[in-house]
Length: 212
Image (cartoon, rainbow, N blue to C red):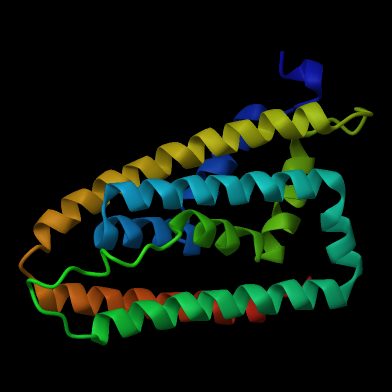
C-alpha cells in the first residue's frame, strides 16, 4: 500500500526517524521542562504546540518553502536569527525563574496565564533548518518517478508525528515521576532549571552557526 503512494524503504525511514526523534533538542526539552514545572495540563498543551509546529513545517517543506529558504540566504538569515532570539528568550526566562526566590505558600505563576501551545509552535516554526530537514530526509524515501508527492509527504509526516507523539507522552510521564522525586529538593530543582536555561542558550548558538 505504501508503494502505491510512492514511499520506498519504509523500514529504513522508521529507523532513521526514531534516531532523530530520540536526539535531545529544544522541543523535547521544552516539553519535559514544562511538565516538571507546570504540570501535565501545561505539558499537554506544549506537546500539542510542538506537533502543530512540526505539521506546519512538513506542509511548508512540501509546498516548496524549503527550496525558497535554501536559495535565498536573506530569508534563511532572518528566520534563523528570529529562532535564535526566541531560544535565548526562553533560556533567560527559565534562568530568571530559577533565580527568583518564592515563598512556599506563594502560587508559582498560577495567576499568570501562559500560552504554552503558542510558545511550542513558535519554537518549531522559527527553525529554518527543520524545514530543510524534512525535505532532505523525506525525499530519500519517495520514489523519484512519482509525479504527485503530496500523498507520500502526508503518510511519512503522519508516521513521524505518531512516533513523536509517543516519545513526548513518555517524556510527560517521566516529568511526572521526576516532579515527585524533586518535590522537596529545591536546590536540585534550581540547578536543573539553570542547566535547562543554559541548554537553550546552546541551542540558540547552534542555530546561529547553522548554514543553509
